Amino acid sequence: MTTFATTLRGASQRQTLFSSGRSSLFRVRRCLTELRDCYDEAVAVRQTSLNSFATAIRRSLEAICEDRGITDTSLSKRLQTLAFSNELPPRLIEITDVLRFVGNVGSHNDRNVTQAEAKVIDKCFRLLVEYLYEVPDQIRQLKQTLAVLAERQLKEPTDETPSKSGETENSLRYY
Image (cartoon, rainbow, N blue to C red; front, side, top):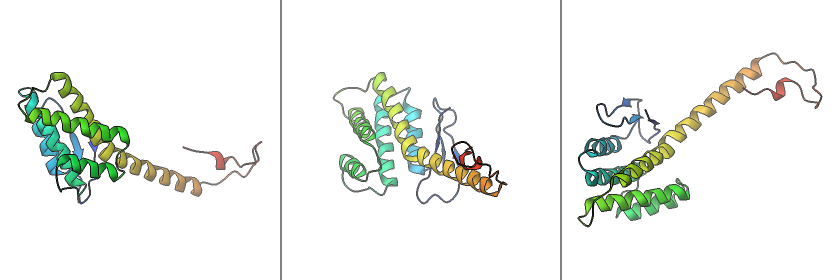
């Protein structure tokens, strides 16, 4: 089961949301409703229409832009704005272009989205969400844990016996 923890701006309370009964669980804490709804829709239609799935993933990408306050013009220009905001490394910028492109394929009548493309865009979208929402939360949690451990270490009685390197034993202890 994949879990995405989010730190979306403006979220006031923690909640855990599930797309229960769907082929893929997408658990999100403090999730933007529009993003969750777009992805839930994508998962719901994936088995019956890969074109609809790709289009819903594209809509989910639009929801990410909206969450970041980027709401003007076309999705392509929104993604450029997101890229220039330095929130995404180059590989993830490339992923957003792939998601947009396959989403466009799904919404036009030129050709159909393939099963392989659907699998890739689902993985790529999940990676994007993980990077934007879960990783910052994990970093925040790690920093909190390190701060608590550092505080505990300061409160512990110290053994001031110097080691061979000249430093005290406690000055080298990490948890």
